[in-house]
Image 1: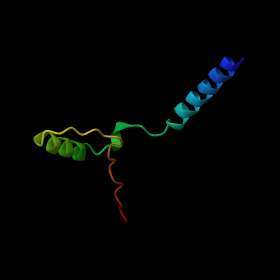
Image 2 (image 1 turned 90 degrees about the horizontal axis):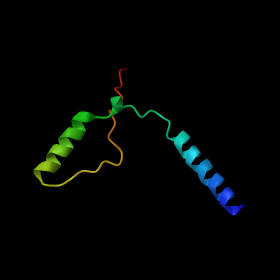
Image 3 (image 1 turned 90 degrees about the vertical axis):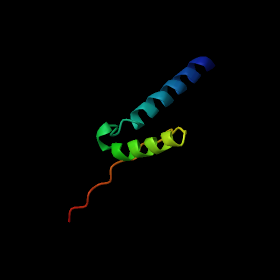
Image 4 (image 1 turned 30 degrees about the horizontal axis):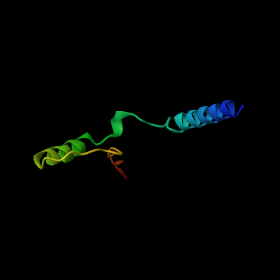
Length: 63
C-alpha cells in the first residue's frame, strides 16, 4: 500500500511540474546575437559557457 501511495505522489508531483513549465518556451525571444558574442569570446579564451537561462531580448519601449 505504501508503494502505491509513493507512486501516486511521485506521479502527481511530476505532472504538476510539467504543467508549471508550460509557459512561453519559444526560441523567438532569445537574444541570439548576445549568445553568439559571449560564446565566441569564451571560445577565444578556451572556456565553455553553460547557459542556465538564455538571455532574452529586451522589450522595446516605443512611447
